[in-house]
Image (tube, rainbow, N blue to C red; front, side, top):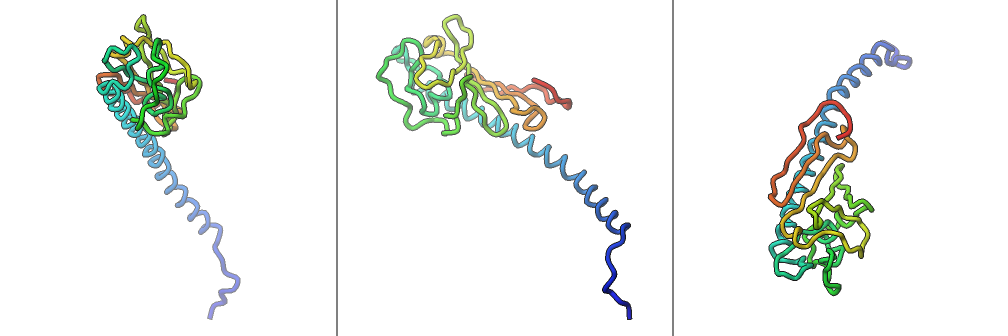
Length: 194
């Protein structure tokens, strides 16, 4: 009969187990990271689709009508998420209330000073036209009257989404405007700034 008290794993057996675990990890980790990138990009696309739908809804029901001509205008994240008083575009009446119920979720109320919203590994930004037709971004300060043109805001808006950390949270940037078609940059294998 053998004595099993002093037996254990040999160094060779431990090295084989560690090698097997390393091989499995080498196969699984890149697939996991790739799946996370794909999920973040899909989430960014879905967010831009929701944004386009929300803009169309607010425009159609004329919830924002700063120039009171009966034609609805497009808005910023704060307008659509019920954070700002509607129609704080230049020349808007002062007695306008916030959008109830909001057409965007509460996560779009977290707007930084540059008008950026971070969500799902991506950064989002809306641009509205000023009187010259140039884009004006949201400034993120509640109560600010934005320098957008109400007449031009009846016709155009656009939004961008780009990875928070290129290569780790996404590899493509996205764009959408009043026409609702989402355009993306080509996926690239090498990391770098977009």
